[in-house]
Length: 285
Image (cartoon, rainbow, N blue to C red; front, top):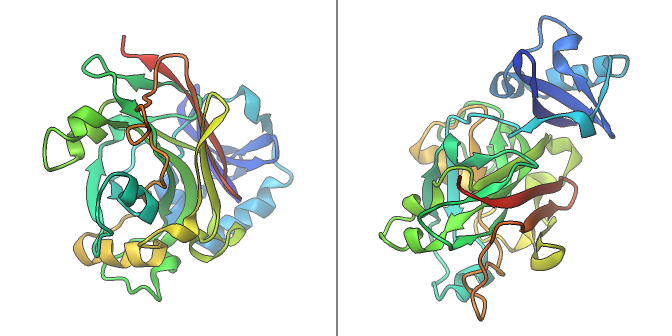
């Protein structure tokens, strides 16, 4: 099933996407949680029941909705660097034996259809197509064998990076947290619709229709179960937490000459079986 968040007169609302229409979950009963983390925490059985109830529910067109990031304010956005071998190579980095991990804040997110913001401080805003894991169950010290049981779903992510600021420090965090640089959405696809661990899915990114990245999640160095095991050894993963799993080769800074995003560009991240995340680019006001 496909879950999304949208803006309603009452605030953020949840919906179940059914083709080109959405069933607002608030119409399905008082037992339906009002937040995406709480909804995912109800588990697959509850979600399957919602799908059955939504069949006869009122619907509204997806095209008329003001979409939000599917989890508008995640508790944690954990990002993985250098997780595709060719991307590590294009940046002159060795293949890691432990993932590079950093965090993003919720203010760095951009909704589906909203512009990615090129900041006043830099003209080096770059793209990064990524598979996002959305956690569905509280998890600590989870083994690889059990890891997929804590996944609530998967989504597209564009881990926009301000490259010159990223390299001002040995830590990448500063270049990854400019406001509205991380596209997220348009929806969460629950695991039963995809191969285990979302493995083997084509992942691509286009700028103004031109393909810049084209790979498969099978090329990830640390795959979904391994990442969850590594992270849950360190931190408690909570429902609604997001893990951005790294980007394949083809980023802008590694091109000759380098190519960065400019106002008016349209960036699309497409992941097989999940969908397409589309964002324009605008300068900071």
